[in-house]
Length: 86
Image (cartoon, rainbow, N blue to C red; front, side, top):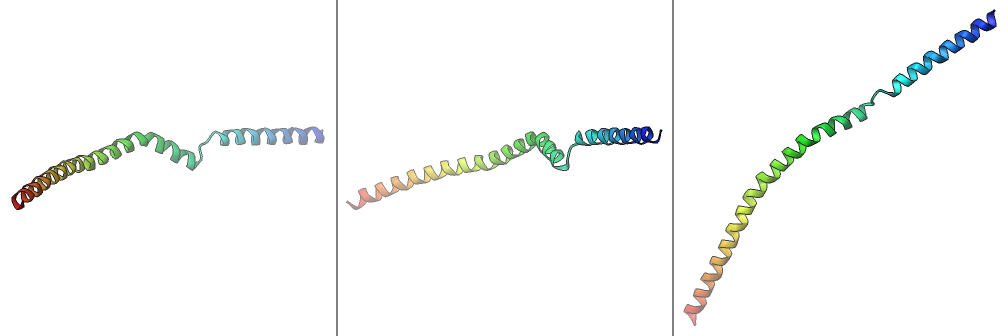
């Protein structure tokens, strides 16, 4: 009778540990939670990043246009000065 009781107790303990172990495996680790949060926030991050790029790109494009205009003006002025000195 004592052998059956200890075998039963051992089986119950192993069963409980197995259930706890399996339920613990289904939980996310902090790293997995952070990765999931980053994935869900990546759309918002990409939108904010694109807005920042656009905010920089538009003035840079305008500056390049002005730079091109200034170069043309300088070339025309240099040509006029060259003609006048000949």
